[in-house]
Image 1: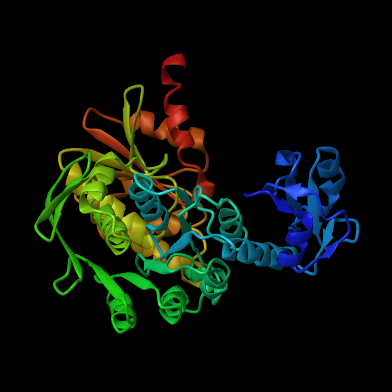
Image 2: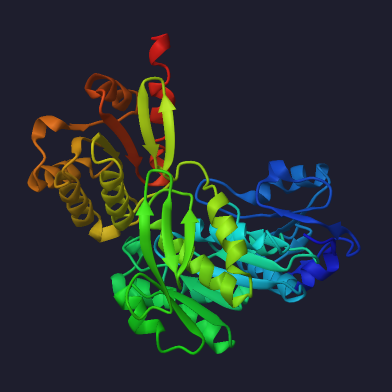
Amino acid sequence: MEPTSLKKIAFWAGGKLNAEGGFIIDNAVIDSRKAGPGSLFFCFKGKTYDGHKYCGQVKKQGGYSVGEKEFCDITVESTKKALGRLAKGYIKNKNCKVIAVTGSAGKTTTVRIIENIFKELKETVATPKNFNNHIGLPLTLLEAENSTEYLITEMGANHKGEIKYLAGIAGPSAGVITNIGNAHIGYFKNKEEILETKVQLAEYVNKKGGQIIYNYDDDALRNKCSGFERSVGFGFSKGADLQAEIITKDKEGTTFKVDKKEFRLNIPGAFNVSNALAALAVSRIEKISDKISAKALREIKLPKHRMEKVTAGRFEIIDDAYNANPESVKIFLKEISELYPGREIIAVIGRMRELGEFAEELHYQTGKFIGGLHNVKNFLATGYFKKVMVKGAVDGGLSKEKIKQFSSIRQAAGIIKKIYGERSLIVLKASRLQKLEKIIEELGKEKGE
């Protein structure tokens, strides 16, 4: 964050200034422990905590506070709205271009690929981790400095209308929609409502005269977005503006061709080519050469717990435990089955969250899909809907003796140690809160037991 006076911040945030306006702020935090001289602490309230309780601590550490109480340095009606207003005012005063990425899956990977391409030539700031909501997005915008040329943001939605709100804060000149699936469907009436919410990014960008990049292979998105001006459809389907053909794929990545030019994406999973195509479309719009993009695709490295190959003692593992939804689980396991046809897969699958009234059926269908995969030899299920997944797996064709349920990391590791063989391959996939990657640590203790 560029050094900014407390007076200007109060103005942008729409708040009442209770301190001297000349104090300079150069970073924003929501964790009081991270506050120091020049920090602006936002006092959020949750079910079990109240940030206002830490204003005194922040003051002792040299920071300032924004909150809904009169004792804050800046008093506002709503801390959430104040953060959004501040970020909107701040980014409007910067010369950088904002590129927004949304979709049901692949958002974070797409952001990382775009970042990897752009940073070769441009001063680029990108969403850290998956800071994509009403708190994370504004905090990302506040990371921009005067030298920043591009800001790559991620926009998530678990409520109707949320993308419209986030787009209004960030003001993107280009918007990417990766796909439409059942992620977060528990907060929506149906998949159509998810589509309408995601397409709000395209509607905003179109109104502002910007570029829309969308997944042409997704029928719902194609029907919604192909009619917009300045739109680019990417995918494998005939008719896509940016059409790819997969040449080869292996355990390390995928080689594909676009417009007779060959690219190598050095992250496993052919499904990631779709994310790479979205990034390639953005880079072409911004006049970055295919040569630079190709280099970035060869050198890209994903964050941990995303198709990550791990060895723990005698155990070989594919860790994709970062997050999960019904579509991503199916795509992931299908890809693993194709990449490792000679291996006997031990699929360790946990609960997928935010599916609401659709959760039971979607977990059942996921289990059924797993049961039908030819080289899934064992299935370990956990989480609230584990029994439903187990029933689905049995109905899908997997024998009951090959299916186990577990309720703790230690229990899962114990089961795996008993069934793991020379041809086994463990795969981990679940929503973030399940923290299935801890199984790796537990398996690694085997020698010491």
